[in-house]
Image (cartoon, rainbow, N blue to C red):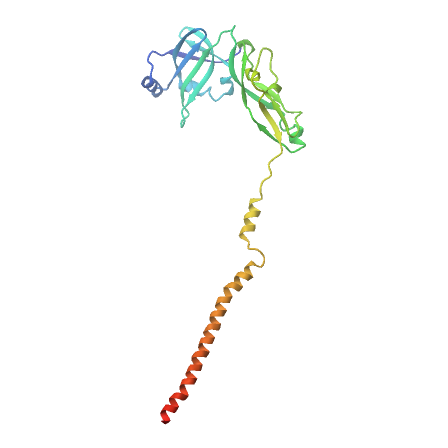
Amino acid sequence: MRISFKFGADLRDMQGKGASRRLRHTGKVPAILYGGHQDAQALILDQQNLLTMVGDERFYSSIVQLKIGEQTQEAIVKDIQMHPAKNVVVHVDLQRVIESEKIRIMLPIHFKNESVSPGVKVQGGVVSHMRSDVEILCLPKDLPEFLELDLAGMNLNETKFLADVPLPAGVTIPELTRRNAPVVSIHSPRAEEPEAVVAEAAATPAEGAAPAAGAAAAAPAAGAKAGDAKAGDAKGGDAKAAAPAKKEGGKK
């Protein structure tokens, strides 16, 4: 049985939201240990000790050893609740491990030779990951650290599925009894729209549009000038027509 992490735990007597809140204020983390045909146990873990482990991928796919008083217990991490805004562990769920009983645990999938695959290196494709982990079933002694999928032979527009993931002896993927889900594919890169060109074309007026706009703007001005000229001529004509009348009136 491969054990990667060891840490201490204390039994927790007080339970409830208030008790858990007080524990967190003192740098401790409430936890629960269940399974293994035994009653669940409420535990107390150290916050700082946990923070050194939760960032390690192996912490979630390994068997950990708890030292509870004078006893030791092997377990797997089933769930870790983190604070939404702080780097603080809020709660931990652990499941007991028995050597003779199979366990279900999520394992990460590592992808190998992505950049040298023909679909990427020669055909210019892009790798798309549909799955990054999968639940496996095995005895504790057969538990691998991760699963590995080799993409060295993949071409453009090809997809690998769960059934293509190599499994060590004694390891199975329960999901395969229901469906063979896609895991990774290589596809053509999406063509980018020439946004800059489109924006530039929209900002620049079409050929002939500027003169037409100018002509349209000039027409009213010209019309206004012509109207003023005609108005002036009319006023002048009226003045000329009125002058003789005044003179004739003067003679009379």
